[in-house]
Image 1: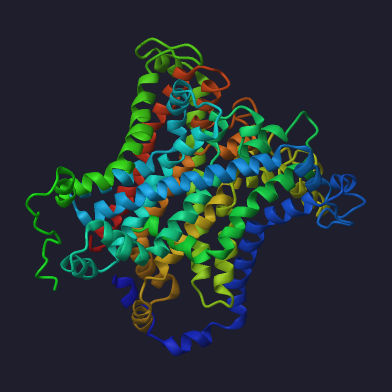
Image 2: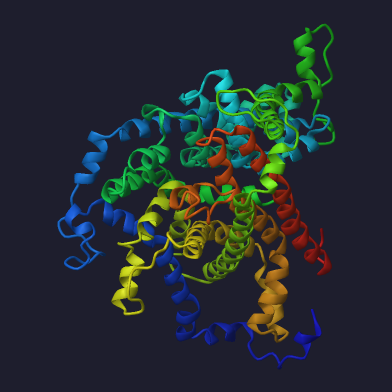
Length: 298
Length: 316
């Protein structure tokens, strides 16, 4: 290392001593306090969302008589309004349909592509892999105008099909890239011995590689589902009628009306719209983390 | 075993059909397997990318096919102060938000890398802002930044720090700071969790060796942790810059580019002109104008950090 280190004071903190140096006081200031701050800031908007969603209207903006941080007599009025007097359930259903179908479509295409690039190693496989990665970097905010033009011309404007067909533009590159990493980790020998035993490529893929890559498939699947659930700009551009909207677009364009914002209904809409991905996430935290970090590595 | 099947390819059997031969050959099979993904990406990604560039050279509007007008859209944008404002905003937004995300994310990653009780639980809840749909969390921020009933203003007024509510989204500079804050809030978890994954790959023995040599904890961070983390920082920040630069959702929810275009990013301006304004050609030109900046940002953050890694003698 550099000369700075060698001229430093003699080594007094050996490793056993380091733990003792880490007094409780120091740990509180250096670790627990920042952590508490981070957790508070990162989670407060959700708390605020939840509190507002169940707050009766007369308490919502009356900070003088009611503490804004707490709810006296929580109400389901906003949620009831949302579920029975607006098109919200329809938006949930649309989002679900679009997310599920675009995820399945992307996963199917990606499995083949990733397997071809990683294991069949056809001529130009490296370049194809690089192109896939570059495709992942193309942002939707550049593509939405030409895609809107295409959607108009093909005649699928304002339909769920438009979203199911356009979401894979960002899902396929992501899933392929992720699955390539997983396929790479499966030992070659397994495939080779299957080839010796006379298995076809198709049999190798379905009977050996896919079962071993199930964690990767789950990671890619739930991540793709989340990405399509959260997608906004395509849904905003390609959908115009209320009954075809997805949750993010519907909440923003239909529940925000005039100057008086119905914060209770808006926040319950945001809360309920977040729940599916949060529930999915809570079951598969490790898969999420591995797909997020897996997409970044390499 | 591995030597007997070096190529992993069986010899083609004679007398098989055309399809069989195709699937037996490596390239044929590769092509066959690539087909769905490649067809999709060519139709819905490569073609629109080219179409977007073409639209930027036409005066297409919604419902009317345009004609080629050369660089007219770009000349028009060159003299358009709103466009330049959006360029400035995008650069400011990307720079400030990325720096903050990096510093705070690295800090959070270092904190999470310590021995903590319930570490996995913390890691899980910290990622929540990133999992929840941006539009929906942005709505919560809209409510938090309300001009009259903002909870932040309320608390600050209770503490006696300010006299009247802060006009978060109504004043140009406040609005810029507010959208950057919301973007940083959403981006920290991504940076932190990715960097944490990188930190966990650094062998403990290196820290022990440095400590034995008398390195202080800052020196250990500066000369052990940081160099080893640089490759992953480069990739994470490239992604972060890319997503921040092309951000659309937060601005669209919080300010729609207002007040008086003070927070328009290039993405929101391009949407504004193309979809509600109907000028597809002009919107496409703005989107195309993002590409050089985008490439520049990617190259800068990628190669800038890559060179540092090389200078410090890291293996490629």
